[in-house]
Image (cartoon, rainbow, N blue to C red):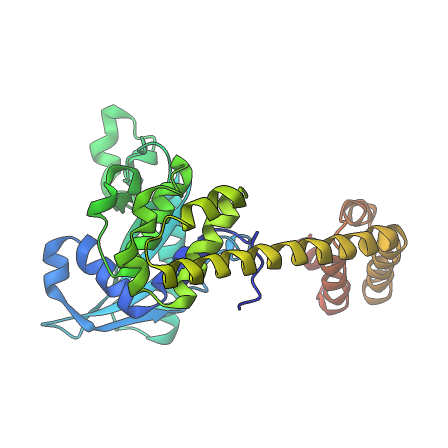
Length: 334
């Protein structure tokens, strides 16, 4: 049983499912534009590192990056797969920053005259309502009407491929059995339909691995803590073996969540008891390191340190105070 607690971000369901090449391949074959799908060598699909994501998003985003070779060329295509649970009016801007990082990383590994790969950004939107945001970067730009045509050629522009689960009926969601159930779960959650029939189609549940079944049950428990209703739904499963396996998983995951909550409560109690003295000591260690390394600790930095209550961050700042080339360089890390 994985150690990931039941309350972790729901993005993990999508990332765990579509990191599997078979699930990703079936998804893209169904949802990429047909002409692009026909041009791809599907045996070449490879999951790439997605280290281009901003650090502050790294633990919650469910971005995936794939490379695909094209049939009649040595060129390849990057597919940037992004899951968005709420509408982001500036989604195109965020995608542009990701795309730039992909190109920068590629350029560092492939010096000129190597050409940059094409990137197809796909956004899988999960929500109650269709998006009103147009998937074009140009629509974010304030182009004065009288000179728009003159300015437009100098502006970056692209359109991302927007797939909205709310617009796709449950029975039209396509892919592998695990991929289909993942998409159905993501569609059902904001609609409060996680206990409805589409997510519990037995032919699909029989076809997935036990680890995949665990992720689905974990997702349901994470989104809806009403265990009685979940167990009532599980009892409707006709296959006794599948019903027993699913019920056992639900009980194990629920107990795991309770145990994790107790441990977190103990850890929180210890943190609260030590916090004031610990934080004061850590802040003093940072300011003292600056005084020794750089001759002083300006008042502005002291005030910034006073507002920081994360011990791990203060520990990193202490190391940074020792390593920084100047006070100005250190101040930029605050």
